Image (cartoon, rainbow, N blue to C red; front, top):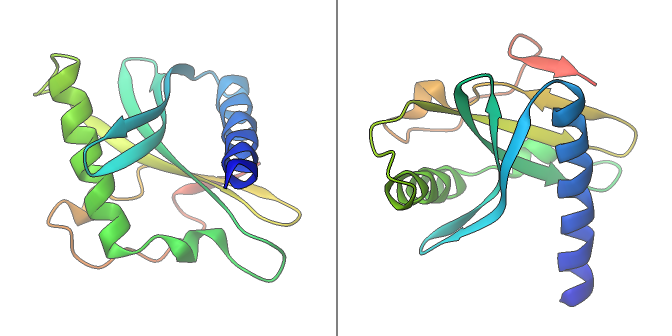
Length: 131
């Protein structure tokens, strides 16, 4: 298990480097909450951004592994983070950095339409930036 954690940390480092190159400031890594974990917490200007990092081997699409349960855990962890940092009313968004076999994609504001925790949206080219 330690090896897979280290590999996950390597991918989070890669995602953090990408975001820093795009002008983000990394605030926190691997925030552990009661019901989930936030891979990265960042700022883009004044906008608070919770970043989920997904990686899959060749032949698999990282974004497809984000289930409704995962979204629920992310929202729960984000709410806990906001309370613990004394920012319960702060606006935020979720981004996803997907690391595939031969490309990395940054999807911005991915769960905006899922505040009611409905079905995860399909990822398309509109909200993403190929890296």
